[in-house]
Image (cartoon, one colour):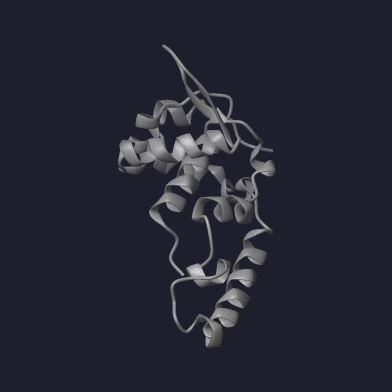
Length: 152
């Protein structure tokens, strides 16, 4: 299975925000840290805001931050929302595939998908942030890294 770029950027955004708890950051900050498109990231941030994972502050000095604690962000739930469906359209109901009524792959993939999400449901954003120091060194300039507090 391969996650979409949208899911990848969703996870990256939340990791960055998790490392910067208590601080407002901007989309350009995140895009620069990862070397990714700010335009694509804006769409991700919009969806994360609509789903209640982040809060945005408009205006000068604005930015975004986590709306939940890292312990309150379940990876399985998050990726279900970001992916918007199953591995294949046929796993979510009727599809355009003519062999769907007789296809054995549907059941096998559904079982695999359920197993994947069962594992992901065991983890939160807090798990992804530990240990924090290596992530901070990679993603943040030295002056910011010195001001980041370590999670309990």
